[in-house]
Image (cartoon, rainbow, N blue to C red):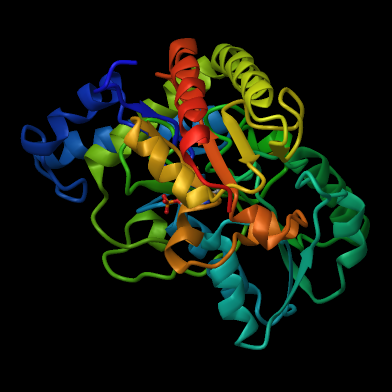
Length: 392
Ligand SMILES: *Cc1c(COP(=O)(O)O)cnc(C)c1O
């Protein structure tokens, strides 16, 4: 094994910026540095870059340019969707429906609202992270103003039935002649692999970010369907239709649009390639560690093509991660966010995995650069570590 080889299998945390994206961004740091609000030449160049990027993203999502609100991250977009919608609808009802496996960027705003008199129903998923849309519809009350369900899960890769929920919700609202409840989806993990057409998904609000799709970190957007009322959460110069004040991050936005365009163009081919690789990885691993179990749906089913969440019973996940890192293989424990707070992953808890097994779980998330050789190397590394690592 080459000693200095580094294998990055943590693409669900973040991805490297790809060359084409960096090239697209480069002129907007020190060559064209204008503020799009300025009337002079540099301002107009920046304004055009902003308009072109917005148009690219609205074409990809099948929406209108004025429906795209640029933000600083997926987290900000989720916050804007949840606080924005509930702020605008507070007099119409105080109930929200969500799912127990959402990202912290959704869970934490919901927790805040719960301290302010809102009630939240968390639908429990099945053992693979899937939800029965029926459960959502039976949870709706006349007080329900918002439903927020992620498109694909970041820990176990489950793809949730957003289009199906959206379609049924449309009928539900039509029958009651109401525009409520609004439907929001966090699509951060989906953008590299799944269809983002808001008309097919029937969503009112959709969160995307750039750092998960080979674009720069610190850029995101919220799709806000025309006619959907949300309250701004940040005030100032009135940028982004007054919904998100602050000078736009032009290089970041240009990079985000370029990254999203490439990701969506390549998604079918990349899905096929990565499904084959994850399938190979899992089969090889299962031969080496027969007691290992895969969390979430089977490879090739309702699962992101790049995700493998694996429990190694009896092994300490954190120790395994460090040994793997020593061998040049980078992966993650149950969730990077949960690792900071030292709590067991709420996602794996919701999938009814025991606290002990959660501590024995690693997430491998593959990406554009991952090859079969990388997987073979990783399997060899696990073989080596298995001999060294004491059972817990
Ligand atoms: C990464 C991620 C976020 C947060 O995005 P940031 O841009 O890092 O703030 C939100 N939701 C999901 C599903 C994610 O994977």
